Amino acid sequence: MFLRMGEISFTVHRYFAIVASLIIAVLPVQLPAQTGSVAFGAVKADPSLPVEVTADALDVNQADGSAEFLGNVVVIQGVMKLAADQVIVIYKPEQKGIESLEAIGNVVLVNGPDAAEADSAEYTIDSGRITMRGNVLLSQQGSTLTSNELVVNLIDGTAQMAGRVKTVLSPDGNN
Image (cartoon, rainbow, N blue to C red; front, top):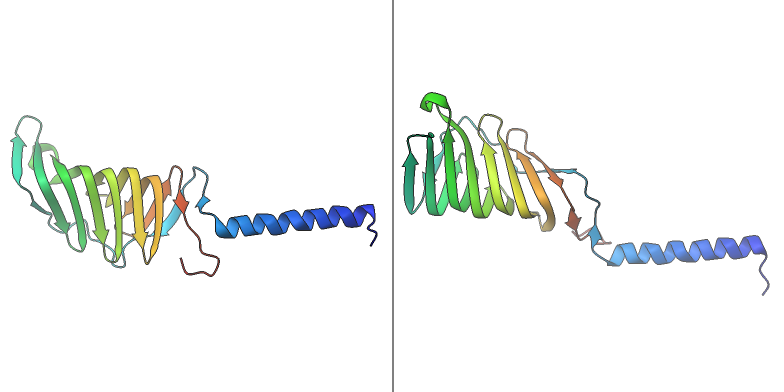
């Protein structure tokens, strides 16, 4: 069997394309450090609902208008649940409601069937945005994604992942 120069080039390119396809199908995928949108929470949350906080201890600082909840902290607002080792509540000026929550240590966010874990999180109440940072793990319908940062918009039920996003894709579509 003799091949001409053009046929050899086509055969080599075809061989590399097949090998590359197999590698992509079998190995875990690491996406570049960019952002990607995902849905988050089957039910859209309502940031205007009351915030319930349970913890082992509470320290209040009248000078700076903050409250620090310590130990097994659980924050519930409607269908959204946030758990952490420590949560600092920052109040708006003149104690006119909550401005934000800062969760630190073993942070877990659950909204409907979706859950995310991180080292820390900041929840800005009025915007309905939760920014999770450090070793982020997002679990959705049997799939998992990891990244350095996850920004969840509770109002529209979406999330953005950024910073070295990683997931494992199954060639048969069962992710």
